[in-house]
Image 1: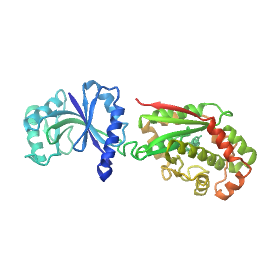
Image 2 (image 1 turned 180 degrees about the horizontal axis):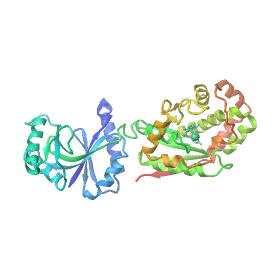
Image 3 (image 1 turned 180 degrees about the vertical axis):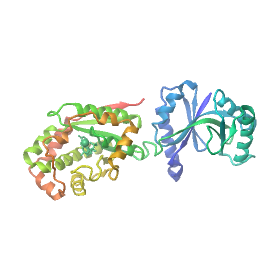
Image 4 (image 1 turned 90 degrees about the horizontal axis):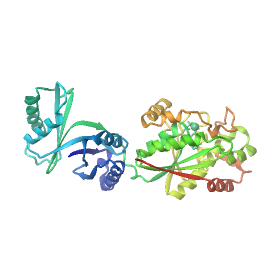
Length: 386
Ligand code: ATP
Ligand code: MG
């Protein structure tokens, strides 16, 4: 039977929180590998070990572990006893059928009382492999790397190491509520918060009943893709058109976008209160569009008491787009839709609105009643992965 050896990321640095982080990572790995017949996910001497009953499931295991935050790297491995001859025999078994001309053996000893040093183990195993296969040792640019990990009672040998996503395991930092439009930015913002250990609840505002369902359908598909990274998600869908109609009748055109956003935040803040969310998350990026100035951002967040996080605030569009492609959301985000923020707004919105002005132009609106009605009609969708 083979194993997958998983090395954690920043968890290693987290001092007394470490046991809690490792427990969460184990739970997340167990969850993501559900239905692959892999078993016994356990934490051994600073690593997670997964039993793989059948090498055929490796491609799917590799893909799924690639979605799991908190993993630095992982590899398919063979278990061995700790004698040098056994390590070499296991390495030769793992290399069977491979074609190469050069290799390197890299060794890590978790058990420092082992009688040989790491370079000594590498040299001895390397010698046996070289004699048998005729490949030359190249420590700088080997075609194949043989990785050996010596633990207290056992050792693991692997020949293929995958990079993990890094970050912190989802769930260690609490829950946040992300405002998910159909655009490119907000899914990236939500994903980055997952990478800091947050479980993300999503909320989407559509222009219903004055606009069609396309933006909601995009938000649903985006949530589905993002669920790979946290295994379970909820998307709260709010029909926002009625609120927009009220804003339009009360407020001059240039101010509308800021007022829309203030209402969105208020509704999202109430959802956060209900689900135990500690912060809201948006995809805003400073100066990206005319409405995203420091003045407007301040006027928008003044509407709520809860913290508003903007993980993309200092990123440029190219970086954000590249990240969206890696996450798998870009192709969905660029599909045309009807964005409710474009409803009844001018091409030139106000760029420097103060919170005082916002409160003043909001005066004629019955904010509480509007928020209450939107929440009553809110629909919630659930997603699971796998
Ligand atoms: P995105 O690509 O995320 O839409 P954007 O640059 O187009 O970002 P805006 O559309 O101005 O920016 O919106 C800024 C942020 O406000 C979004 O990133 C998102 O967090 C939130 N937001 C805007 N519209 C909606 C919506 N219809 N539903 C939910 N959140 C929204
Ligand atoms: Mg947008």
